[in-house]
Length: 291
Image (cartoon, rainbow, N blue to C red; front, side, top):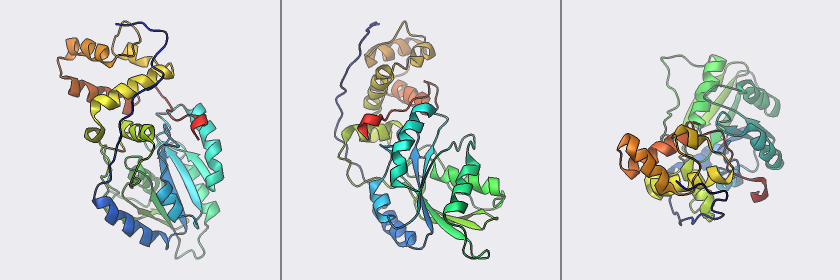
Protein backbone atom coordinates (compact mmCIF):
# COMPACT_ATOMS: atom_id res chain seq x y z
CA UNK A 1 0.00 0.00 0.00
CA UNK A 2 1.58 3.28 -1.02
CA UNK A 3 1.88 6.01 1.60
CA UNK A 4 2.19 9.07 -0.58
CA UNK A 5 2.15 12.62 0.77
CA UNK A 6 1.09 14.08 -2.56
CA UNK A 7 -1.61 12.65 -4.75
CA UNK A 8 -2.37 12.98 -8.42
CA UNK A 9 -2.94 16.57 -9.46
CA UNK A 10 -4.86 15.51 -12.56
CA UNK A 11 -7.36 12.79 -13.32
CA UNK A 12 -7.85 11.76 -16.99
CA UNK A 13 -11.55 12.54 -17.57
CA UNK A 14 -13.28 10.56 -20.36
CA UNK A 15 -15.67 12.17 -22.85
CA UNK A 16 -19.30 11.51 -21.94
CA UNK A 17 -22.29 11.96 -24.21
CA UNK A 18 -25.62 10.96 -22.71
CA UNK A 19 -29.16 12.11 -23.42
CA UNK A 20 -31.81 9.35 -23.22
CA UNK A 21 -34.52 9.55 -25.88
CA UNK A 22 -37.41 10.00 -23.43
CA UNK A 23 -35.85 13.24 -22.16
CA UNK A 24 -36.74 15.07 -25.39
CA UNK A 25 -40.45 14.38 -24.86
CA UNK A 26 -40.24 15.26 -21.17
CA UNK A 27 -38.42 18.51 -21.97
CA UNK A 28 -41.06 19.57 -24.50
CA UNK A 29 -43.83 18.84 -22.00
CA UNK A 30 -42.03 20.75 -19.25
CA UNK A 31 -41.58 23.85 -21.44
CA UNK A 32 -45.34 23.96 -22.10
CA UNK A 33 -46.22 23.67 -18.40
CA UNK A 34 -43.65 26.15 -17.11
CA UNK A 35 -45.50 29.07 -18.71
CA UNK A 36 -48.45 28.48 -16.38
CA UNK A 37 -46.40 28.37 -13.17
CA UNK A 38 -45.88 31.21 -10.70
CA UNK A 39 -42.42 30.19 -9.47
CA UNK A 40 -39.69 27.79 -10.58
CA UNK A 41 -37.71 25.72 -8.09
CA UNK A 42 -34.45 24.25 -9.31
CA UNK A 43 -33.09 21.42 -7.18
CA UNK A 44 -29.35 20.80 -7.15
CA UNK A 45 -27.11 18.45 -5.19
CA UNK A 46 -25.47 20.24 -2.26
CA UNK A 47 -22.22 18.38 -2.93
CA UNK A 48 -21.97 19.89 -6.42
CA UNK A 49 -24.04 23.12 -6.47
CA UNK A 50 -22.42 24.31 -9.71
CA UNK A 51 -22.02 21.02 -11.54
CA UNK A 52 -25.65 19.99 -10.90
CA UNK A 53 -27.12 23.21 -12.29
CA UNK A 54 -29.14 22.97 -15.49
CA UNK A 55 -28.67 26.09 -17.59
CA UNK A 56 -31.18 24.86 -20.18
CA UNK A 57 -34.01 24.78 -17.63
CA UNK A 58 -32.99 28.09 -16.07
CA UNK A 59 -32.88 29.78 -19.46
CA UNK A 60 -36.46 28.73 -20.21
CA UNK A 61 -37.67 29.84 -16.77
CA UNK A 62 -35.91 33.20 -16.93
CA UNK A 63 -39.11 35.25 -16.57
CA UNK A 64 -40.21 33.36 -13.44
CA UNK A 65 -39.21 33.93 -9.82
CA UNK A 66 -36.63 31.26 -9.03
CA UNK A 67 -35.64 29.39 -5.87
CA UNK A 68 -32.58 27.13 -5.83
CA UNK A 69 -32.70 24.26 -3.33
CA UNK A 70 -29.38 22.58 -2.56
CA UNK A 71 -30.65 19.16 -1.47
CA UNK A 72 -28.75 16.46 0.45
CA UNK A 73 -27.11 18.94 2.82
CA UNK A 74 -26.66 15.98 5.19
CA UNK A 75 -24.01 14.65 2.77
CA UNK A 76 -22.05 17.83 2.00
CA UNK A 77 -19.60 20.08 3.81
CA UNK A 78 -22.21 22.61 4.94
CA UNK A 79 -19.63 25.31 5.62
CA UNK A 80 -18.19 25.12 2.11
CA UNK A 81 -21.54 24.66 0.36
CA UNK A 82 -22.79 27.80 2.13
CA UNK A 83 -19.87 29.68 0.59
CA UNK A 84 -20.87 28.42 -2.84
CA UNK A 85 -24.49 29.36 -2.14
CA UNK A 86 -23.41 32.99 -1.71
CA UNK A 87 -22.20 32.94 -5.32
CA UNK A 88 -25.46 31.42 -6.56
CA UNK A 89 -27.62 34.17 -4.98
CA UNK A 90 -27.05 36.44 -7.97
CA UNK A 91 -28.90 34.08 -10.33
CA UNK A 92 -32.10 33.53 -8.31
CA UNK A 93 -34.45 35.00 -5.71
CA UNK A 94 -33.49 32.59 -2.92
CA UNK A 95 -30.98 29.82 -2.20
CA UNK A 96 -31.77 27.22 0.47
CA UNK A 97 -29.89 24.21 1.81
CA UNK A 98 -32.19 21.28 2.50
CA UNK A 99 -32.17 17.60 3.36
CA UNK A 100 -35.06 15.45 2.14
CA UNK A 101 -33.61 12.65 4.29
CA UNK A 102 -33.97 14.58 7.57
CA UNK A 103 -36.44 17.34 6.53
CA UNK A 104 -33.93 19.89 7.79
CA UNK A 105 -34.96 23.43 6.71
CA UNK A 106 -38.30 22.26 5.27
CA UNK A 107 -40.14 25.26 6.77
CA UNK A 108 -37.79 27.61 4.92
CA UNK A 109 -38.99 26.32 1.55
CA UNK A 110 -42.67 27.05 2.13
CA UNK A 111 -41.84 30.37 3.80
CA UNK A 112 -39.79 31.42 0.76
CA UNK A 113 -42.58 30.50 -1.68
CA UNK A 114 -45.18 32.34 0.42
CA UNK A 115 -43.04 35.46 0.42
CA UNK A 116 -42.02 35.39 -3.26
CA UNK A 117 -45.37 34.39 -4.81
CA UNK A 118 -48.27 34.86 -2.36
CA UNK A 119 -51.52 33.45 -3.80
CA UNK A 120 -53.59 36.09 -5.62
CA UNK A 121 -56.79 34.27 -4.64
CA UNK A 122 -57.07 31.96 -1.61
CA UNK A 123 -59.29 29.49 -3.44
CA UNK A 124 -56.98 29.26 -6.46
CA UNK A 125 -53.57 29.13 -4.83
CA UNK A 126 -50.16 29.29 -6.47
CA UNK A 127 -48.39 26.89 -8.79
CA UNK A 128 -44.69 26.10 -8.74
CA UNK A 129 -42.63 23.84 -10.96
CA UNK A 130 -39.78 21.82 -9.54
CA UNK A 131 -36.97 20.70 -11.85
CA UNK A 132 -33.32 19.82 -12.11
CA UNK A 133 -30.93 17.16 -13.34
CA UNK A 134 -31.73 13.49 -12.54
CA UNK A 135 -31.44 12.05 -9.03
CA UNK A 136 -31.09 15.27 -7.03
CA UNK A 137 -34.18 14.47 -4.95
CA UNK A 138 -36.97 16.47 -6.58
CA UNK A 139 -39.72 13.94 -5.85
CA UNK A 140 -38.45 13.38 -2.29
CA UNK A 141 -38.76 17.11 -1.64
CA UNK A 142 -42.34 17.13 -2.94
CA UNK A 143 -43.29 14.23 -0.66
CA UNK A 144 -41.62 15.95 2.31
CA UNK A 145 -43.60 19.13 1.65
CA UNK A 146 -46.87 17.23 1.34
CA UNK A 147 -46.35 15.38 4.61
CA UNK A 148 -45.34 18.56 6.40
CA UNK A 149 -48.36 20.51 5.15
CA UNK A 150 -50.84 17.65 5.75
CA UNK A 151 -51.70 17.67 2.05
CA UNK A 152 -50.76 13.99 1.93
CA UNK A 153 -52.36 10.77 3.07
CA UNK A 154 -51.33 7.18 2.47
CA UNK A 155 -54.21 6.55 0.06
CA UNK A 156 -53.19 9.31 -2.34
CA UNK A 157 -50.59 9.25 -5.05
CA UNK A 158 -47.07 10.30 -4.13
CA UNK A 159 -44.21 11.48 -6.29
CA UNK A 160 -42.13 8.55 -7.50
CA UNK A 161 -38.66 8.28 -5.97
CA UNK A 162 -35.70 5.94 -6.40
CA UNK A 163 -31.91 5.66 -6.19
CA UNK A 164 -31.44 5.55 -9.97
CA UNK A 165 -31.70 8.53 -12.34
CA UNK A 166 -34.79 9.03 -14.52
CA UNK A 167 -37.32 7.40 -12.17
CA UNK A 168 -39.88 10.13 -12.95
CA UNK A 169 -40.80 9.86 -16.64
CA UNK A 170 -43.71 12.31 -17.04
CA UNK A 171 -44.90 15.66 -15.71
CA UNK A 172 -47.06 15.22 -12.58
CA UNK A 173 -48.99 17.68 -10.39
CA UNK A 174 -49.47 17.55 -6.59
CA UNK A 175 -50.96 19.66 -3.81
CA UNK A 176 -48.19 20.41 -1.29
CA UNK A 177 -49.77 22.98 1.01
CA UNK A 178 -53.24 23.73 2.34
CA UNK A 179 -52.45 27.10 3.90
CA UNK A 180 -51.59 28.80 1.69
CA UNK A 181 -53.00 26.66 -1.10
CA UNK A 182 -49.96 25.60 -3.11
CA UNK A 183 -49.49 23.12 -5.93
CA UNK A 184 -46.31 21.80 -7.47
CA UNK A 185 -45.58 20.24 -10.85
CA UNK A 186 -42.95 17.50 -10.67
CA UNK A 187 -40.84 16.96 -13.78
CA UNK A 188 -38.43 14.22 -14.87
CA UNK A 189 -34.75 14.89 -14.36
CA UNK A 190 -33.53 16.76 -17.42
CA UNK A 191 -29.87 16.48 -18.38
CA UNK A 192 -28.25 18.96 -20.73
CA UNK A 193 -28.20 17.53 -24.29
CA UNK A 194 -24.42 17.89 -24.30
CA UNK A 195 -21.96 18.16 -21.43
CA UNK A 196 -19.00 20.23 -22.61
CA UNK A 197 -17.16 20.03 -19.28
CA UNK A 198 -15.97 16.45 -18.81
CA UNK A 199 -15.18 16.82 -15.10
CA UNK A 200 -18.66 18.21 -14.48
CA UNK A 201 -20.04 15.14 -16.25
CA UNK A 202 -18.15 12.69 -14.07
CA UNK A 203 -19.21 14.52 -10.91
CA UNK A 204 -22.80 14.10 -12.05
CA UNK A 205 -22.11 10.40 -12.50
CA UNK A 206 -20.62 10.26 -9.01
CA UNK A 207 -23.83 11.54 -7.39
CA UNK A 208 -25.96 9.24 -9.57
CA UNK A 209 -27.34 11.76 -12.06
CA UNK A 210 -25.84 9.68 -14.88
CA UNK A 211 -26.07 5.90 -14.74
CA UNK A 212 -22.94 4.09 -13.58
CA UNK A 213 -22.75 1.94 -16.68
CA UNK A 214 -22.60 4.99 -18.97
CA UNK A 215 -19.31 6.15 -17.46
CA UNK A 216 -18.04 2.92 -15.91
CA UNK A 217 -18.05 2.11 -12.20
CA UNK A 218 -14.25 1.77 -12.21
CA UNK A 219 -13.80 5.25 -13.70
CA UNK A 220 -16.25 6.79 -11.21
CA UNK A 221 -14.59 5.00 -8.31
CA UNK A 222 -11.11 6.07 -9.41
CA UNK A 223 -12.25 9.69 -9.66
CA UNK A 224 -13.84 9.44 -6.21
CA UNK A 225 -10.56 8.24 -4.73
CA UNK A 226 -8.79 11.12 -6.47
CA UNK A 227 -11.25 13.66 -5.00
CA UNK A 228 -11.12 12.24 -1.47
CA UNK A 229 -7.34 12.42 -1.46
CA UNK A 230 -7.27 15.85 -3.07
CA UNK A 231 -9.50 17.27 -0.33
CA UNK A 232 -7.67 15.34 2.41
CA UNK A 233 -10.75 13.28 3.21
CA UNK A 234 -9.32 10.03 4.52
CA UNK A 235 -12.40 8.48 6.12
CA UNK A 236 -12.15 5.70 3.54
CA UNK A 237 -8.91 4.50 5.16
CA UNK A 238 -10.72 3.72 8.42
CA UNK A 239 -13.87 2.49 6.67
CA UNK A 240 -11.97 -0.13 4.68
CA UNK A 241 -9.31 -0.82 7.30
CA UNK A 242 -6.49 0.22 4.94
CA UNK A 243 -2.89 0.65 6.11
CA UNK A 244 -3.03 4.26 4.93
CA UNK A 245 -4.12 6.64 2.15
CA UNK A 246 -3.36 5.71 -1.44
CA UNK A 247 -4.00 7.19 -4.85
CA UNK A 248 -3.98 3.78 -6.57
CA UNK A 249 -7.46 2.31 -6.94
CA UNK A 250 -6.07 -1.14 -7.65
CA UNK A 251 -4.49 -1.21 -4.19
CA UNK A 252 -7.83 -0.45 -2.55
CA UNK A 253 -9.62 -3.11 -4.61
CA UNK A 254 -6.97 -5.74 -3.90
CA UNK A 255 -7.32 -5.08 -0.18
CA UNK A 256 -11.11 -5.34 -0.34
CA UNK A 257 -11.03 -8.50 -2.47
CA UNK A 258 -9.23 -10.34 0.34
CA UNK A 259 -12.14 -9.52 2.65
CA UNK A 260 -15.20 -9.76 0.42
CA UNK A 261 -14.04 -11.97 -2.50
CA UNK A 262 -16.01 -9.86 -5.00
CA UNK A 263 -14.93 -8.88 -8.50
CA UNK A 264 -13.64 -5.37 -9.22
CA UNK A 265 -16.95 -4.19 -10.69
CA UNK A 266 -18.94 -5.16 -7.59
CA UNK A 267 -16.34 -3.59 -5.30
CA UNK A 268 -16.33 -0.32 -7.23
CA UNK A 269 -20.12 -0.14 -7.07
CA UNK A 270 -20.02 -0.79 -3.32
CA UNK A 271 -17.51 2.03 -2.76
CA UNK A 272 -19.60 4.44 -4.87
CA UNK A 273 -22.71 3.45 -2.90
CA UNK A 274 -20.91 4.18 0.36
CA UNK A 275 -19.99 7.63 -0.90
CA UNK A 276 -23.57 8.38 -1.96
CA UNK A 277 -24.78 7.32 1.49
CA UNK A 278 -22.28 9.60 3.23
CA UNK A 279 -20.25 6.75 4.71
CA UNK A 280 -16.96 8.13 3.38
CA UNK A 281 -17.39 11.57 4.94
CA UNK A 282 -19.27 14.76 4.12
CA UNK A 283 -17.66 16.48 1.16
CA UNK A 284 -18.41 19.26 -1.33
CA UNK A 285 -16.70 18.54 -4.65
CA UNK A 286 -17.26 21.85 -6.46
CA UNK A 287 -14.80 24.64 -5.68
CA UNK A 288 -15.33 28.39 -5.56
CA UNK A 289 -12.59 29.09 -8.14
CA UNK A 290 -14.55 26.95 -10.66
CA UNK A 291 -17.60 29.21 -10.59
